[in-house]
Image 1 (cartoon, rainbow, N blue to C red):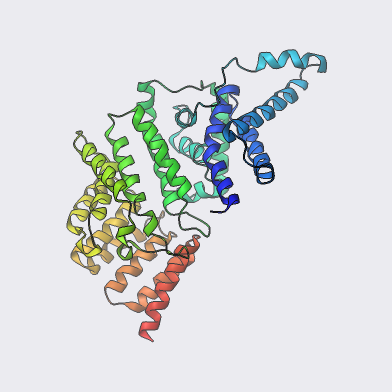
Image 2 (image 1 turned 90 degrees about the horizontal axis):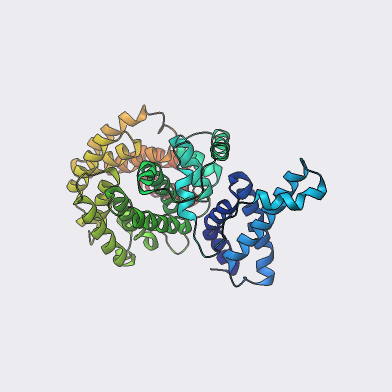
Length: 412
């Protein structure tokens, strides 16, 4: 990794922590975010020439705090005469003790999921403030226009400012109330890290690592919640395959073609232990079942050893509990692996009428794969190409076009 890449990754890792610290001191979400962005720009400009400061996090907090002070001075000057500004500044800044070593990311996470916000707004705001996703990436995750998502995030910031939400870690009871939104946020952040929705990289390991870090923090706070343990297990079991998912040139390697010796088997062991614990806790939730599916994949020494009947049974449970079209899509794949491609293709017809999936590349990619299994190479080529035309992730697009080219060449 080059020094510029290392600096960029460090800044991404530190952003939610610096934003949390600035929010804790000043309480103004929108202004704090602007101040942190200015601090990041200053760091990106100065650090490559001057070297990393001894305490990069403290440096960023200091610069963001200076920007916030400037902002308060400017706002005060509009209402007060210039000679009153210095006195008013002390009154406007809350008397909060600043600890440069305190990580406020978890507080920021729960604050973004406050009950004053709708679930969709809370998730969007947290993805932006804590996960570091762009508005465009969040919009794609929700299948809505970017302008719509930008308005949603802006309204969420305004709601938080107007509500006067205190910047503190909620009580255990309050945490439980916000937990569903928190978990969904971290799930989406991890998914964006596992397969980037846009760009030249298949994966964004920084986002995946941050999601896992935050999940560990949530689990320390709520260790008895089965879905918390289940989601952490799901992340670990899925992320364990990261090194085998990309080739030397960043190309996508599908699950059945991966070198499983490259999987992180210590991480798999931790994930299996966690999902076993979660499933024995009583009620079983969606994340626990998804983690169980990931464990079945990870415990197969070879692709041909995969216990597809067990995976199909687990997806059947998921499909009965959720109307998520991605679950239905994966259920169709598992059905094809057990009962043959015709059975899987039949299930895909129901998804053709689902507006959430009509433009999604994965529906075409799965149909192409099942058509290839069924021996319909011409149909498979057409759908591989359609899938490639609908994804903005370059390695995915290259893989899908390569699959189409392979089949077209075979039939030539």
